[in-house]
Image (cartoon, rainbow, N blue to C red; front, side):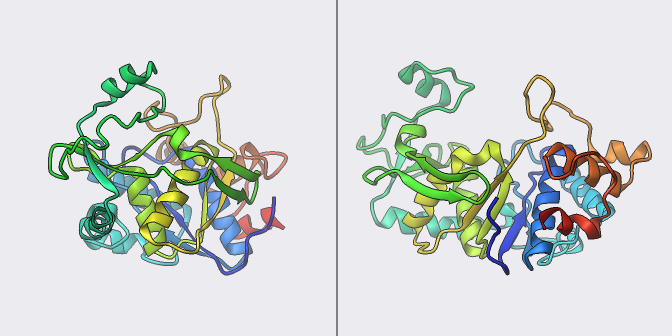
Length: 300
């Protein structure tokens, strides 16, 4: 792994669609450990763009878990989030997303799309549960930019994206063959993950994104979208190992994997959770408990 440039700004960005689990602890070890080792800044972002699945109770649980673990962000604190609207909660940023969308629309890069996931899957002979490649069905059809249609940005016409992951090395990705024109807002007027995080990372000054390997494939399309939006200096990326079940599935809230709150209730300490997370992500040989203050030592 290559060391990041000291003084970077990164983020811990959970979605309030369930409780934090050990997989989030792995990400926290990498985010806070690298930041403390290389004089970085950690911002907390609540990624609640999916209004159908996010719940206030889940956000409350996330903030409680972070406080118990001692993981204090350097920007807005967990108390700031509890107090009310903040610019690092995606549901509070509609005006900013609308502004960026309008800028792309003014350049002729946005079109309305009526296609559902099922229709795209049928058109491309793909399984609906897998990542789908949008075939361009509605591009050029004159579907206006309005409510009740999805909004996509045209991302074709460029060479493949090249970037150097700090852990995985040189990468080449072609967003047009991976996903096609990006959906930015769905038919329910909800902002998509790809669009919201790209805008957020730029406007919040994130210059190092530390996240799991499951999001590696998103990197090229986010770099391209950031450039279309006007970001001239892209962030660096580091994709860390995922915590997985024995059968290879990653831990997830949707699978109801053991939450940190449940571990806490059975007597686990933050140091024990950090030690296990460090072991399972390859940062130490065993699960010896590791205090928060020593996370930086994992990256010497």
